Image (cartoon, rainbow, N blue to C red):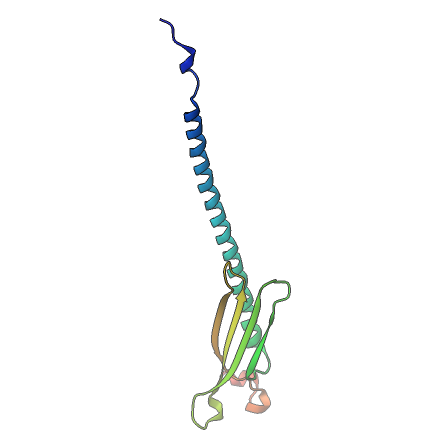
Length: 143
């Protein structure tokens, strides 16, 4: 008995079905890649914003004089990243000058996919006092 050559090849329907399945798989793979890329960019920007925020907070804490007011600006070398700082006085007691603190709110704005993102920190700082104001040297103030 002889077989016909007709059954040895793939039919057009089988080829089209295979191409459709491969195409659907490729679309899924490309979507997963794009989602992963978006998440990596977001993580990079969030890490950068956190680093810039911590740096700005440390600079504020190390300032010789802290005074109430608002300030803002852009980070040099970081396109799309900007900051805003608000410093206000807080009195703890009613009459005592020694019971004053500074409330500092720092916000870093960074680019997002659909809107601008913001990362913020809020802290309280003691006013800096010189040795002349306190009448004590640095080693005496630590005791």
